[in-house]
Amino acid sequence: MTVRSEWEVRVDQTIGELAASTTTVGLYGSSHPRAVQAVQRLASQLDSLLGTESELAFVLLGEELFIQGRPFTRVSRHAASLIRRFRRRDIEHATFQLGLTLEEVGGFIGDLARTDDSPVKSRPHVQVGQVEISERELGGPDDATGGKQKHKLAAVRDRVTVIQECFADFALGRDLAAPDLGRVARALWIGLAEEPDPFRHFAPWEGEDRWPAVHAHNVAALSMGLARSSGIATALGLDLGVAALVHDLGKLLLPHEVMARELELAGDELELIFDHPRIGLAALLRNSQIPPLAAIVAYEHHLNYNGTGYPRLARPRRPHPAARLVTVADSFVVLFTARGGRGQLTREGTIIWLDEHSSTVLDPSWAGALREMLEQPPLPAQPPG
Image (cartoon, rainbow, N blue to C red):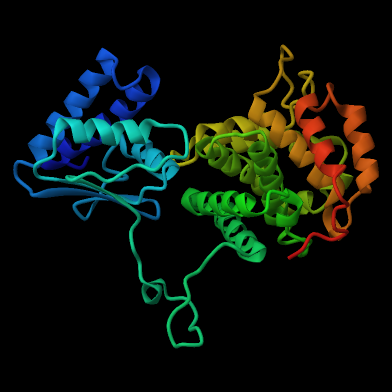
């Protein structure tokens, strides 16, 4: 058992107070007595730590939370919760400085607890933002000027490559790289803001080996496109994007030879496919950096709107709204952009299928929203790369 220093214990308590106060303010509002007390406790913790140091820097790099340059992801049981909150608000560093006031702490927590798109602001003694890394530090290929190019995820192929690498590592027994999948979801969300038509963000067929990544990418693009058109907030939209990316995660742990014949399976082998939602749920519950919504979607995306489907339930019930949305997107991607580069149905055939399965297999609201998209000017025969 590792013995922690007194300073590490105090920092761990501060991380816990940061997460707890944000939750309390989000639930009750900043003026509620419970919220006021939570902010006061946090301010007291920060004041105690700043009594011996001029500033306290929280920095998020990859999957690690560093405080004063020391890693705390595995040291603190509260770190995972704070990491999720920082990532949701696109914060990579927050530095608290000597002279910090209660009002500044309250303002920072109030911003952090918001669910809209407004940024978390810096204050005189609270500096918030992203870690600036030079292009040369990123080590990308040389550009025409001799400098290094920053790796971006604007291109479809780049996003699919990141997903493919995350999936390949996971299949080999490594931890799922949740931050990288979060970057893909954010890139898609930004792209949809510029071009709302989700079909124009689809990845084309790239071969059998990359099919799981292409499928995940296209399900996420359509899920987020439908969600964005309904007015969903950014924070929830990003969680939904990650959920859509990992909805079929359980399949990565099934035998490769079985998955290669997925559309032809029958009998006992088909039972393996029926179990992949449970396998995915178990894997995601072990990863503290994955939003809880992703575990729900992974488990329920094959439950039908009327409560049938699988995993088989003792009492049929309607699945979670996010799972119902991903089910619609997943069905479309399988039907229209299936293996081999050709879908099983035409655009018109897909519309008929949606109508036939609405209110039974599919949520009628999301099926209707997708139908409206499909009735717009024709989809490209092959999604652009």
